[in-house]
Image (cartoon, rainbow, N blue to C red; front, side, top):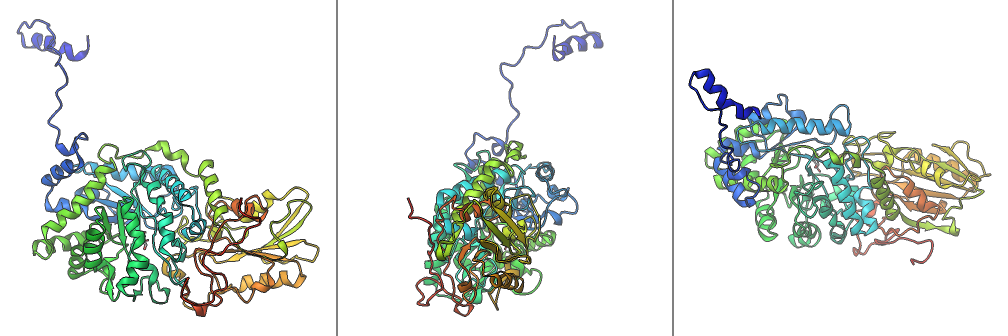
Length: 618
Ligand code: GLC
C-alpha cells in the first residue's frame, strides 16, 4: 500500500481514536491549484500578457525594459531582485571556458535566478550571432553578409539562418541581434561587410534568413528571436563614418534604407535595433517620427524595439545618460534598453521620469506588452532552459558543409586572363603566399570569438591554404610562404591570398587610403619579379582600391570574409564549383570615387552585379 494511504490509519492509532484503516478516496482527478492565467499555456498570449501585467508593479515593468550585460551583473541575485527582462553577451563577453556547455550552464544559471522572482518571468538573452554563433569557439562561422549578398541566394540565407539558430539554441540563447539589413552606400564604412550590399533589393533577397532564425513558430525547438538592424540609414552616413550623420532626403531614406525593414516586418521579425546614427541631425535613438510613426505606425511593427549598446547615452553626444535622454528615447518608442552596466541608475532615472509624468504609464505598458508577448511566443514560460539536444549541432559537419556551399557561391571571379583559372589539379607547381592564406582569424574577420576578431587560429576551421592542399592531386606541389620568400620561376602559378585583417564597427572605417597594405604590396612585388602568373584571392570586408595593381594579376577572385570553411574558396580555384558570385557593391577605380554606387554616373573598375564564369551557366 503506498505510503500516502497508510497515513489515516497511523494518525488514528497515534491519537488513540480507533480509526478504521480505510484509505481516503482518491480524488476523481487531481484538482490543480488555482493556476494564474499567465501560467496557463492553453490561454491565448494576449490573455496571458494582460493577466501578468495586471499583477506587475511599476518596478516589475521597469525591470522588464532593461537589457544588462552579463558582465554588468556583479550579484546574480540582482537579476531576480530587479526583475531584469534581458541580459546580453556583447562582442567579447564569453564565459570561461568558452565552450558550448559553459554557455548553456551560464544561461541556465541566470534563468534559474530570474524564475525565482515572485512572478517568475523568464529572461530573454541576446547575442550577436551575425555570421554563425561567432562568439562561441568551435561554432560554424559562415561568410559575412557582404559575401552572402554576392550569392543572391535567399534559400541559402534561410538555411544559414536555421543553422545559426540551432547553434545559438544549443547554448540556451534565445535572441539574436541579426541580421543587419543596413544598405552600405560608402565602402569606407567599417561595417560594410555586415551589409548584404549597396541596394535594398539585396537585403530583401537575403531577408529569408529571418525566417530561418525564427522558424515557422518562435516556440518551435531551435527558433530564436531575430533582429532587423540598425534602424534606419546606418549605411548611408556622410563619408561612411560609423555612427555618423545620414544627410539625405526622406524620399531617399524611404527608397534605399527603409525597404529592408519593411520586408523584415512583413516576414514577422521579432525585434528591431535602433541605429547609433542620426538622420538629418536627429539621433535615431530619439527619433519619434521614424520609430513611432513610421516603424510602429506605418509599417505596423508590433515586436520589440531595442536600443543599441549604450545607444541612449549617445543622444546628446556626452558620456552617460540624462533624464532628458531617457525620456526622449522611451517616448520615441524604445521598448528595451541595452544599458550594459549602469542599469540600476537607469531604472532609477526611468522611474523618476514616469513618476514625474514625463513618460506616460501607457508607454511603459506598451513596451512591456511587446516584450512579454515575445517571451510568451518563444515559449520561455514553458521551456525556460537550454534545449541541449542542439549542442551537437554546434560546428557540426552538416553546418560546415552548408557554410562551404555558401563560401563557394559567394566567390566573385573578377579577372581570368589567359584562362589561368581554374587551376589544374595534377602535375602542377603551385606557390601560395599572402598573410590571409593560412589564417582562420583573417579569413573570418570581425565578430569572430572576439568583437574585433583577431589574426591566427582563433577557432577550428579550414584555411584557404589547407583547402588548396586538399584539392590539389598528390602529383602537384603546393609550396607556401606568407611573404613569398622562396618563390622562383619554376612554378606554374602563384596564388596570393591578401587583403584586410579583422576589425569591427568604427575601428574599420577607412577615411583615407583603401588600398593594400605594405605587407601585401611587398608580397606581390616578390611574386611579380619571377614572372610567374599571379592569381589574387582578395580576403576583405569590402571592395579595395586595387586598380594600380590589377594589370600585374592574371586572375582575381573577391573572396570577401568566408569564415571557417576555406575549402569553399579552393573549390572555386580548382573549378570544382563554377563561380556564380555577382558583385554586391560597385568596385571603385579609385578611393576618390567613394561613395560610388550603381547608377551614379561614375565609371567603376567593376560594375555592380559583375562576375565571370569558367563556363556558361548550365
Ligand atoms: C554593438 C553594435 C550592435 C550590436 C550591439 C550588441 O555596438 O552596434 O550591432 O548588436 O552592440 O553587441
